[in-house]
Length: 183
Length: 290
Image 1 (cartoon, each protein chain N blue to C red):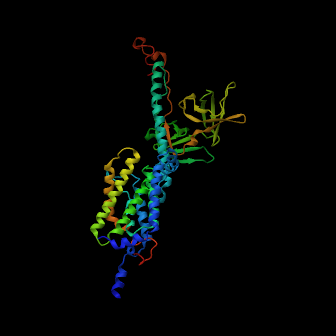
Image 2: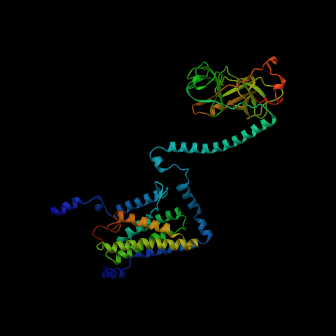
Image 3: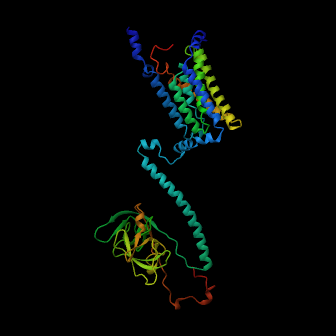
């Protein structure tokens, strides 16, 4: 059919790429953002909160269901975050994995592909839940309630940037799953 | 819209990945709790310290610098920064010592060394031929260089100006065979004359018979003869057979710049007939410093 042939030809490189390249590219983006986050976070003297980029992966990659490769990547990023933030080892792994699990559960329960409202609300809830979990964990481990404002600012930055680049973390289907095999 | 049917189907056949995820979350939560024990939390300290050094140590050359080929420049900048930090400590110490020295000289009514003035010049050419070993510097009479000025670099004494132009000056190196520098041992206080003739070390002649230098001590100019000010670093003395040899300090400096210090000037004594009347002098000590 000429129509479908043209449609196929117009597909972008991203649309044609499978979950593995997308996963690699998303990981690269997270690593890059995290690496730049180690430098001074201010532009023209105006300081700003740096996003917790690993949560983008946890939220985005969880939308296609559970898979081992995203889990491993999230654990690696979590370990790096533990060292950078001087958190007890395992803290960010738990946050990342629980956000990933929650994202998977929501996408399994609701049709987030065709319902934009649910998709937006779910994403907001996932980020809010992740940062709430992080606050609870930090407050418990530090033996005092930690400051909310920096975490809130980081949550806003993370969420706003995710709204712009969420397509980067859309795997299309599970990594390792062939096209048309998805349920 | 809820996916009741699909989730129900999925609920029946639970994925092993879900189990893996649950185990991982539980495992990491257990790890967090386990770290309340200092023995376990200390287990991760070396890893943290190592990663922290790499991330924020500041001593490592950045990836960007390596990629753009500026690693050597970065390294040099860091070395110079470290040197500046070191030198700033020395500067503070020198200022403090100069203040104290001035105070002591004031108390003793002692005629101290005149403060060093000088012109820094770039070495434009260096002759290492069979003739006189000289340097050509790009500062001359118009820059305030005087004939007989003493040339120093970061290491120590380099030589004396033997030829002066308007915008250039030729410096006879202390390594030249014809060079003679009156020197003194910094610790031993033994006087001698250092004779050039070799590019790496000079020979000490006219040594006293009863005293000797101390191996490894610094050799300074003694100001005898009035050609050089006192206390400029010339090198380090070493015994070589029966001879004492001075390893030149100037070979440590390689920046290509020299500082040209005016030669010391000693006022000629005036005849007794030209002296002012005794009543015009306020006190016997006053004026000794002028």
